[in-house]
Amino acid sequence: MQVLGWLPDALVSTRGARADKALYLTFDDGPDHACTPVLLDLLRAHQASASFFLVGRQVERHPELVQRMVAEGHRLGNHSYTHPYFGQLPLARQLHEIDATDRLLAGFDGVRHHRFRPPRGVFSPALALHFAVRGRNLTYWSYNSMDYLRRPPTELIRRMREVPPRPGEVILMHDDGDCSTRVLETLLGEWKAAGFRFCALPHARSADQRRARQAASSSAG
Ligand SMILES: [Zn+2]
Image (cartoon, rainbow, N blue to C red):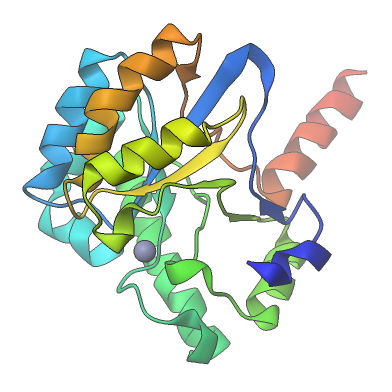
């Protein structure tokens, strides 16, 4: 995470909009055949929208869960095709991982370029430059739930009550285990009572879309 200090906000987004006490729940590494449906049930019960950073090969295994995410108002993000360690992968293979997953996800939501979150948060300067030139950004998080440590949920709940998320925070969680669901079963209600609402991150806008928008507004005006 230290490397992020020198990258511009436009390239690496770690925080969403702060208006209206929004919290951005994000779940990595799914979909999982056992854990994801239970999590989706919980989110639906709280009318909460979220962003799912999906692994392409998992998408191929459980397409019905991805369909359900889209149908229930969640947004899809790209978390590579096989979840490799990007730090040691040639750029061409990194791009293959990203493009293959973008194509898969587009079949569900019609979006061409999804927000990309690199596996384990690791990316190379070459990938950062590739994205910067194309106006794409890498989507990180501002609040780490640490659910991947497989500690008892009660411990995580206590820590998250001690240092609660602030409005606009992007919360990192995972749905390849049940820890996040067990934590949220307790905290969603508390956060809602504190005035928070739960939103999916807006779709990332690519340079292509920005250019099209600029062309449309200049021809209109
Ligand atoms: Zn991951």
